[in-house]
Length: 313
Image (cartoon, rainbow, N blue to C red; front, side, top):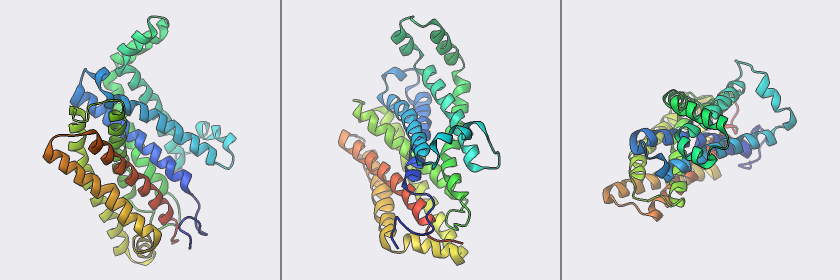
């Protein structure tokens, strides 16, 4: 059986890319909020890492929606999903979360960069200046709601797959938590990578702050993966078969152990521990660690999507 083509396959690689982009958007804005309120505070305009996160978040979520629309068999009917909602459909609820998330994401970016945007406009659009001032005044409320929406979006990427009927590996309550954790990890890595590419200091307080969170986050991901597969194996039946088909042998087994556990989690964990011990961050270390984390998350999305559809109940 081909690892990418088999009879029970319903969703293929564009969905994995969409899930990755939605997760990195949610993770980026989550870490941008943390950096703003616990690290740089009023020095937002000087932080290349918050800027990087605020670039990644909208670009990723819009690109993900574009991929989703193109992948539909009737892409020109996509507007119907935005108008007609079914509260019992995971896809429909996810679209609602996605739309509200985007509104608050742009509102928050406008609020924190109010002064910069005002200088850029130079008083040419009074109504926009008034709107930015209003957003800045309500920044605390917007921040709280956006934080909850980013977590909801990160978890939704897992709920979307767990709603596929007839696939024992995907009908797993740990999956939303696993995708949330990996989405946050990709957001942290993406913010670091783009931040240093935008000439942010590799040994800055933002990098130190994110790395302190990344270490327990990676350990949490490892625990979730262990729990995910242990639960499947101990359940017996087709769930056990699905787990062994995924991690036991073959192409996807190599992807899991070598790509996800090895390159995607163990290498960044070791590098983060090393950087914490040496205390001196350098561009190459930060960029390489971030790239390995992003690779691991992309591989995880594809691994779960494909291996989860290989075994039927």
